[in-house]
Length: 87
Image (cartoon, rainbow, N blue to C red):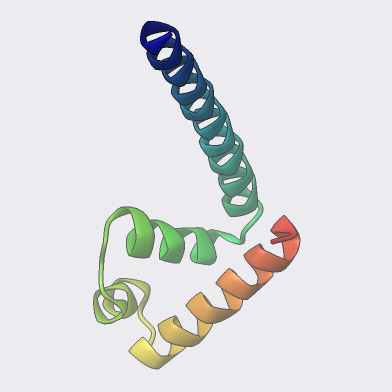
């Protein structure tokens, strides 16, 4: 009985892991689509901020705008992306 419970538990954990992996894949696909639809400057901002881990000040310097503008843009972008994702 114990062996059956352990094996059964392993199957449950495997299914949960597979489901989580599928969910992560769907999330990544949705995120890619949302980013692809952004105007070029907004794509750059998101890439620098979230994929290259740069500060708003660093991004501002690269884009030739103020840090405050980067902050406002980032906030608006994230709000729009959330709305479009249905989250």
